Amino acid sequence: MSLRALVKRGSMSRKGLSLRLSAISFAEQKTRVEVEREEEDDEENGENGGEESGWSSMFPEILVDIIQRVESSYGAWPPRKNVVACASVCQRWREITRGLVKSPLQGGQITFPFSLKQPGPRDHPLQCLIKRDKQTSTFYLYLGPTQSFVDKGKFLLAARRFRHRAHTEYIISLTTDDFSQGSSAYMGKLSSDFLGTKFTIFDSQPPYNGAHPTNSRSSRCFASKQICPRFPAIGNYEIGQVSYKFNLLRSKGPRRMLCDLHCSVSTDATTNSSKFTTGSDIGEPNSCATTSLRNKAPKWHQQLQCWCLNFHGRVTVASVKNFQLVASVDPSQPGARGDDELVLLQFGKVGDDLFTMDYRQPLSAFQAFAICLTSFGTKLACE
Image 1 (tube, rainbow, N blue to C red):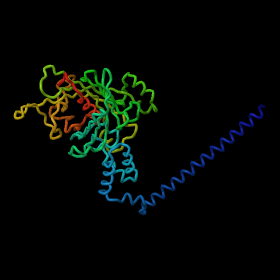
Image 2: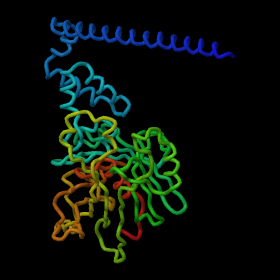
Image 3: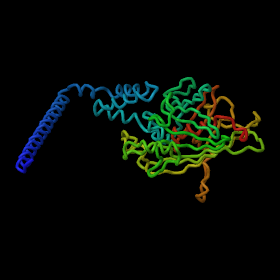
Image 4: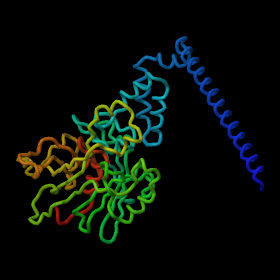
């Protein structure tokens, strides 16, 4: 091809490119003008009592009742999008929804799945129920809506036990039928040793910025599935250990437990509770603190002639699985003291396959559920 033909073709391509750019610029200006006109029309409709004004002029009591019914009318996770839809109606609906949908730390309900890994309330425990299915070795966690043990409430988590040659695993999932570690419903797992006296809790998300997953085969598979570098890769991050002490003297009483957990601490917990958490905030806690727990020592009941714990009516059946956890003394801090009165987690039996689980800050629902799972199973050397 001659030099003249090349120059001619280049000028034609530049001319076509300039025409396309001018067309795109014209389309953007046209779209901007249309959007401005629509916003002006919406403002005029709102001032003149249009459709948006009709939604926003409802009584606050009615709005609160509507959003509360939407928030509590479903027992599974997928319909949680309806709560977001309520907040998208108008500004007034959004403000009322913000006041009702709070993080567990501020005493609100567990509305979205990421709330399962946020600390519980400060002032009062969050009451839950655990239902066991012996045939499938599956455990279901529900949010207890009332004091009654009959109503299961909203489904939160499920765990299934898998026995291996040298250890046992509990896979924790957001659904009741998918316990694959490669699925999007995977929340974490609980792994035990051969005797069932030492357990390790793994989270699917890093507990703090800069955390690294354990060097295992499943973690390497998860790391290869990272989609976006903005979000952390799904893996197995160790967040705690639970151990049971051997009872060589066969003394009576509950099992003796020790728990060391990595609990996330957010410095802006108060501000985050008044707004919807964005995707970038989930799984990125500001810091992480180590919390040590131990089981509360029972007291001797003179009339019953046995060791007892006060569960305040939340436990009705005597069982070696029942326990209460309190903060233990941190040996690394001189002068540190534990609190024997403030129960951070209690677990007990109320039926053949029904148990109660009450937890509070600094534990999350996921951590509390994993600790309670360690109580299932026979521990001959610890009883």
